Image (cartoon, rainbow, N blue to C red; front, side):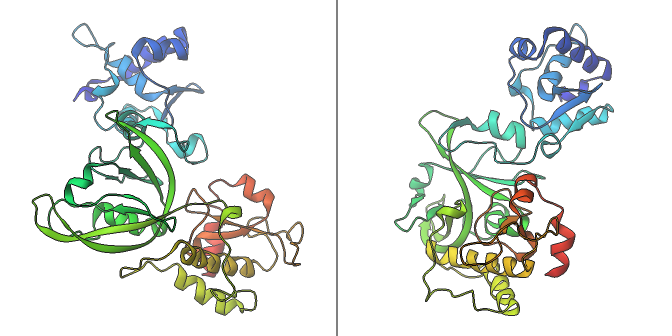
Length: 362
């Protein structure tokens, strides 16, 4: 393996060249893009880890050449592991910036270079579940049509996404389990759609699991089997969430105990096919949020201060914030949602401060 050849001396030589040329010229010389998450830290400076590794390989001696980006099996995480073996410090994506979604809806991305080299995960198939990552990557395209099904939008705002498994009945293992349990695992579902250019995908957005159904469709061997179709809801901003009808949910008159029971039920992972509508999904979300706001009793669950002002209906103004997931919106377990003031909401992108306080309450 090429990375196993790296030595500390060769890495230091690459760092010296980086300092001499400057970042832009160094990356251009070796044909690498800028790192998005993993950086090698040395003498108070940060360096693009993958580019340093590629350049360092060419400094091992006359029979060695610099490595290209495509030569790295496993991507940035593999590079980080090797650097640490050589006693260098490498930051994780969460160390260098709050973990947000590093993709813009509608923009195009190269699957291998922009996703797997940075976050890892399976480079083939429709579902990628990189370890130690807050995302589950979903890839959709036209390939499923040869098996009798296709992904796509439904009239109720649901995106129907077919699970993985080429032979026999689909079951909730591997990628299928990751989709179903993503809320409990604290991971967001990021959906990418294939374009006509090989390897290039358009980012559709962040989604949440709302329910599932099974259909009869042929497997990769032409045998009829049960296929799982996931119902995914786009994670919306609070202002765009459709309002629930009064006869669907009436939460203002509920006691704290009643709201807690409703919230826990809403956060339960469906155990059978559900075909939930988008509105029903958001009603479940409203139950979790209503309980969290009442539990806070008018005080921010981060700083402990009273809500800064009141809503039009006279209730304290606090904002639900998800502490495990990147994106707010959609049903979640009450343990993972805090009611906080606008100031704290702006400050705590990852908000792990809530774990002990809220976890003990629920």
